[in-house]
Length: 435
RNA sequence: GCGGGCGUAGCUCAGUUGGUUAGAGCGCUGGCUUGUGGAGCCGGAGGUCGUGGGUUCAAGACCCAUCGCUCGCCCCA
Image (tube, rainbow, N blue to C red; front, top):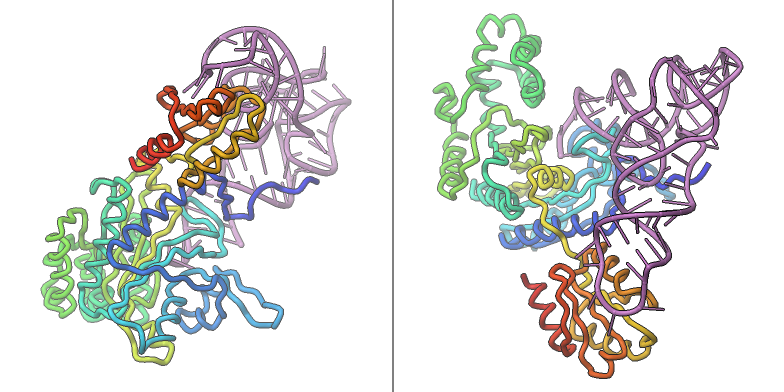
């Protein structure tokens, strides 16, 4: 049996054309994050298992993470998310970092589960956090950034929607208004999280099953639906509308509106899976019918840094995965033609290898990326190969060029070719690069 | 972990109620064409039909198992 050429299940090989797309996406993500004043950091891909056990219950560690023992018998996890690592880093220098702290990272993450559309075992994620801001200016900034990211890929507001909710408001709604116990509220939150996947009668049946008989009699289901059907904060029952979380929430929505972000809305069914969120949560949903899903999500988690035994730091963060982003870009036809990193493909004619060396070296010294074609090929073959590699220009060097010190530059797209000095060639190509 | 769908050339796929030596398009490659390609024409390479077993005179096709891919469920980072 021959060795398999397939990559490990749920992981991807990045052939140059794939890597080019990834580099394109990552450079946009970095560009936007840095435009908002965020600094890039990184952390190891391996972490001690304790980091995850402390945070969010053991289920995630046991079932959906890569866990193994190292040679020193330590239990090690391949990071399934970045939030615990960045919280650890911030806690480690709690005193000396200047707040607000604006950090981003592009970690690769692993989860052990069956791959499916939009969810692989290895993926990359833009992870953005702002530490040290307790007001909603933090949420505002991150939602603005998320919006700027999709815009930077050429998306229009009709292609996606930003949905915002408050965990704190929902906890109050479920416990004080609907009348659930804390345990019931937890189950109900999980149920609400998958509400859009099931139909309404099924949801009502499942919701009903969470309730005790007395709660049922007290009309808990109707109250629940009153909350979940609200399209605006002011649609909420008046007891809830008066809750103190609503004031800040309302001002956040108004600020977003003032930022000309039109496709944002309050959605009481947005819960997010993680337990560590403490107030505002948000996600960006792809509105394309073939990919109707959350593409990124985040929210406020004020309690995590404090788990490391230092004073807590209020934090808002989000994660944006590369797989769903790529689906989004492709599905909405936002993918640009990506050129090679190589500026020039060099074609030699005749036995000029020795003489061409100097010219190539000069082109490189002047800043061009030059790939040298194999000697002895026909020009036509050089052209085809360069085009296949998405290289825009071919420089031809033969006896004539060397004699005149004027070199033929061919633009593969326009098919034009002319003779120029090396300096001129460099400036033409640099102009092209800049476009 | 659970369920559905699909595995035939590098890719996309065809292959009749089971019947001789398994096909097409694209791609790759050689030539027409040794200083300007993309078209056209003529050639060529490339397949243990995912793997193993079974039924049959005969299996790419039918049955079982297994592996892989994929879509969904669970879970959601």
